[in-house]
Image 1 (cartoon, rainbow over the protein chains, first blue to last red):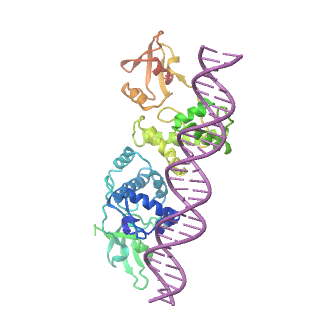
Image 2: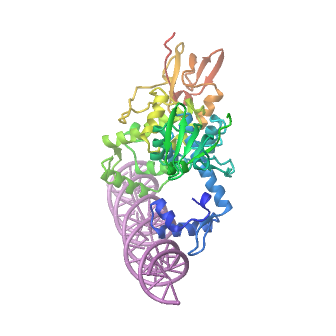
Length: 205
Length: 205
DNA sequence: ATAAAAACTTAGATGCGTCTAATAATATAT
DNA sequence: ATATATTATTAGACGCATCTAAGTTTTTAT
């Protein structure tokens, strides 16, 4: 959370972790003692550089695993999060190194999120939501803002995945929805969906 | 332990688990409450049928994983135990099902030990140590009594693996060592090693 | 600007797994 | 057969993560 939000509240963390606030407070005090987190009473929390590296290494394991599950084991992109959440805790550098090799050192996970490098650094590229593009443009989907499986299943039904090319036919001013051409078919996406799809101008146009 | 020894002592368990005896005692009391283990004060312990099934399911995950690490990820058979010991705790039926499918439903792990079925039942085939065979016989290695990595590395150096065919040239009566032909080379194995290699008469002879 | 609400911290309780020390039962050796 | 050693159990302590309840600070709303 602290990686793309900078500041995080105890409350948010408690929610996300399914714990009560006092538990999170004492966790933060311990992480602060290890200099992984900057913590001052009643102030919002953020990771230190050290903490970001550490978090990056865990995210790396998570995303490499997701990639492995999709590419090698042929799971759907909506199935991999929960499994990867468990496998990311495996302590075996050689295991993740092998994954990385088998996958040809991928830079993105199956949802288009960047895989941190071996030092835990995350290359944060600027990403543009689909709704920022204009009618007449032809774009490729390169990432997702959320990876909850209901969203992923929705995209499956619409046949949208990473690398999908879409032509923007119309942008509805009123509600921000978009009419798109997807191969031979036409497709309507609502504003909230367009906000959660990252895209780039398709190169071959 | 209880699967091929029937009776196990608190002390042995404590050693193996790196815990003190009182800890193991209280564990056994809890397992007994779940009817996984038969426990009476001061008596040796053994798994119940229910406990054997449960253990079988964990062993299944462990051995499937070992097979996956060797066959799919190309780890050496001496590298896989420690990684599998961690992955066996992953809770995801679909993950292990996929492994099983990718491997073509294997019945043995990379060390020749049987993989329990989906219900946790272990097919315990009778296995014959190499030292029980006689000179003149031609045998295949089908399993190992121990899978510690120093032993496995020793076998690597000798170029012995599952499926290796050996011709018994001589059995030394005095110390029980064996002179064998391995391909074009000759090989001498000491008694303790011969006791830990399982073999069968080679079929194509 | 003040009152009310929300967020946060502290103190202390509970549960759990582990341990040590003391005691009891069983196994071994003379 | 008895003494000794080994093995096992019990009781109680400790550390740790969590919680609830109570109090404090900060934010929000009027």
